[in-house]
Amino acid sequence: SRSPDSLRTHLQTAVCWCRIIGAMGCCHNKELYIVCSWDWNEGAEFREEEHLLRGSSSKATFEQEETPGSLRVESDKGPPLPPPPGTPPANSKASSIPAVASPSSRAVSSTSDVNVAVEEDNKEGESREPMLRLRPALHLSGTFANWESDFAPALLKQVPVSDGRKDIARLKLCVKMTSQSFSFQVVSAEKKWTWRLFPRDAKPIRFTHVSKEGKLAPGEPDAVIVGLGDMKAGHGLNFHVVEQKDVVVTVWIEVPTKPSKDPGLVEPCYNTAAGARVWYTVEDTGVQYTGGDGVDLDRYKWMTG
Image (cartoon, rainbow, N blue to C red; front, side):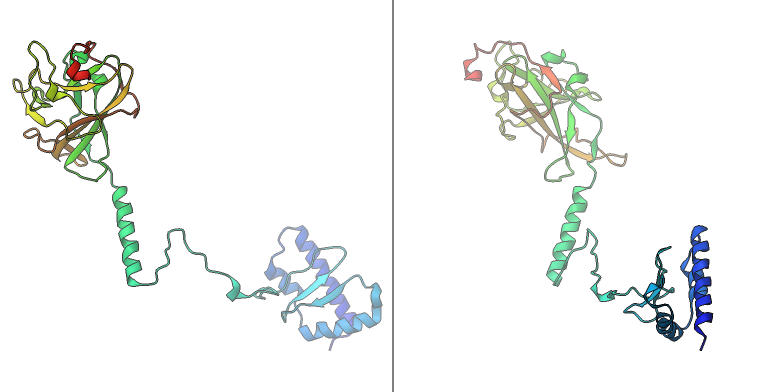
């Protein structure tokens, strides 16, 4: 075995190298291990001999950790030396580290649970499916629009269909009424007046565009049957929203659609009104237009009563 003087010299050299390497900013475990490594038993013998030679005045002490093979040097002039590479932490327990589940993971205990999880994933995928856009756009027209078929303020805004149907497009126009009535037809800027939606069973009062059959009921999508018109059919037959002035309503339109030649788009079925619905709700969904017919309906008690 080595003499205490030889081991002391070895230790002093090791500490000196540690300080030099640390000051240079390159104190890696590998370099430290090469400089400071020696046989564990020699260190243990030196611990006893050094204690006898230097007593309690020693500035450097050796402590054996719980894990064999690790050696720590404590000094009043520097930080503790790390253990050699590959040495496990003193109190490490690999089995005590819990597995972290990913946010999307589910705990399943049976085949039925797996099926339920798959169905939920499918539903989430369906809800993220993009809405097929209706082209060309549709408008509302009436006296408020001077009967233009492309009156920009009355452009209908498409919204998602709640039941996910792909053969129907739902549109809306939120209106702040400036009179007791808001009368309109549904028209296409592309088709002009060769295509229109109107109240099929409407019978207008003579010399007016007002009909009892065209009066919409709030919150009732099927209250008025929708008809398909052209340049002649539907002329003078309008849908009516009858409320008080300054009331905000949302007019809802549903039209049947068919696939377009352009991907991601659908177009109106111009040859049928089957599946078409027109109604309104008394709610503010974001005012898009402010207007009305400017007609005093007090003389039509059967309309306002």
